[in-house]
Length: 474
Image (cartoon, rainbow, N blue to C red):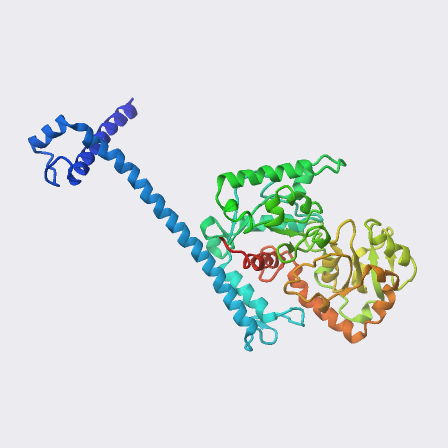
C-alpha cells in the first residue's frame, strides 16, 4: 500500500514537472505572442495557459520525438566513426606488413623475435612479414562471439577426441578476456571479425540420425542459427557474412557450411577437412590441423621425445591405420608386411605400441583417409618423425606462412609403389635439416592451456586475421 501511495505521488510530481517543461518550451520558442521568458508566478501567464492549453502541451511530445532522432543520428555517426577506426586499424596493419616485407631491415634477426627465442630453421616463407603480421594481430585484432544459442550445439565442442581442435578453440575463444589482452571483445562495433560458435561435431552427435548419412538436420540447424543472427544483429547483413568465420574439425564441416550460400561463398571457413576439390578456397578459407588428444593432453610419450639421434631410429618409415578412403588401400597393398625396417600395418597388432614405432622411425607415413586431413601429421611432429604427406587436393594448415617442404616430404599418390625409393634418396644431411624443421615447427601445433604465443590456437587466429585483412566493410 505504501509503494502504491509513493508511486502515485511520484506520478503527480512527474506530471507537474512535465507540464512546467512544456510551458517553458512553448514560451521559449516565442509562440504565445509574448516574451521568450515565462514566469510561473505571473497570473497573466496562468490565464494564457487556461485559455489555450493545447499549443503548449503539444510542444512536449514534439520535443520528445526530436530528441531520440538526434540521439539516433549521433549513435549512427558514432558507429560509422568506430567502423572507420576498425578499417583504419586494418589499413595500418597492412602498411606495416608491406613495409616490413619490402624493407631490407628485418624484424627477425637470427633466432630472436621481439626478445623471444624462435627457432627459424627456414620453416617460414617470409619470417619478417609473418612476425610483423603476428605482432599487428596481437596489438589490434578483436573478435566478437555471438551469444545466441545454447550448449551443447553452440558455445562448446569436443575436447578429448579426434575433433579436439574444434572444442579447444571454441572453449578458449569463449574464455578470452579483453581486459587482460584477450582477442574477444564484447563490443561488436570494435570487432574485426565475428565468430559463429556452433559445433558441427556436437550436431553430429545430438542432431544427426545415426547411419542415415542425411545432413539435412545439421544444415537446418545452421540455417536457423544464421537466420536468428541476421534478424537480431546488423553485422551479418552488412557484409553478407564476409567478416564472419566458423570453425569445424569434423569431416562434415564443409557440408554444414553449405546450409547457407553466403556462409559457404563469403565467410571464412576454418576447416580440418580442407579439400580444394570440394570447394575449399585457400585465399578465403583456413586450413586447421587435426589434433587427436585422447584425454585432452599430448600423449606422455610424445611430450619429450627420448630418441634425438638418427642412430636411435632404426625404422625407415612407419604406418598403422584403418583401410579406408581412396589412398590407404594402395599403400597397404604395396607395403603391408613387406619390410622389417618399413613396418606398415592395417591395424597395429596387440601388444605393440603405436607411439614407440613413431619415436623409432625417421619418417612417418601420413596418408589421407576418408577425408584429406590426418591426425598422424601432428603426431609425427610431436614425435620428431618427419611427416610423409600422401594426399590429393589437401590445403595444408598454416601454409600461408609455413614452408612445409622444410619439415616434411610430399609423395604423390601415383608414387606410392616407389615410397621406399623416394625416402632412401633423402640423404642424411637433408634428413637432419628436415628434423630440425620439425623441432622448430612443433610449437605451432600444440594446444596449450593456458594459450601461448605462436601456439595452435593463436596460429588459427592468425590465419583468420590474414583473411580479414583482405575484407573491407563496405
